[in-house]
Length: 109
Length: 115
Image (cartoon, rainbow over all chains, first blue to last red; front, side, top):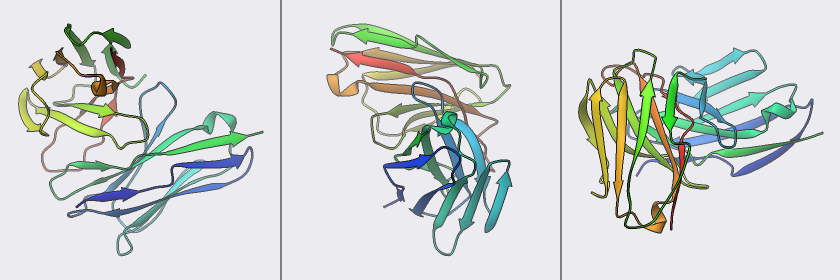
């Protein structure tokens, strides 16, 4: 079966760096997405990786290793507003998104 | 604002009621999706429409009935729901579903409680 694993919850300190990992086993691979979802709000698109390596976008970076079935989202200079759930999703060979359960990130002052 | 709106934002209904959820996208997209989001579970894809045609129905019970009158509007008609159907129902849209990894843009969801 298809499976996406990510930690349920993480805690970090304001101003610090946090890495949220995602591992996947899917039928084919057409890219990996990261979304941010604040409580009671819409998931919003953060990044898309289809090739191996690191993509940097401001304070957020996303890394992909297709051979290892692994990705991470790196958040730098954490701010209180970064408290949210972070969803990892992989697009399979049928271009269908397979979702992880999300990682709830708690930022403490 | 993601360009996708949903109404109502909150809904409480009894098991014998009939209600409808509405989604509208202002992005000029051709594909629209319904997802169910339950606490601590992955998003569950329910239905996909591409150019108003249903292309995916992930074994969803018949008490959920989708309708897509045009590429900008999507409805989810609800009847005789069960308490386990209580969840956040998310609508999303993308350019289309064919031939590429299209980013999906989500609405804020309807929080549904079935009593």
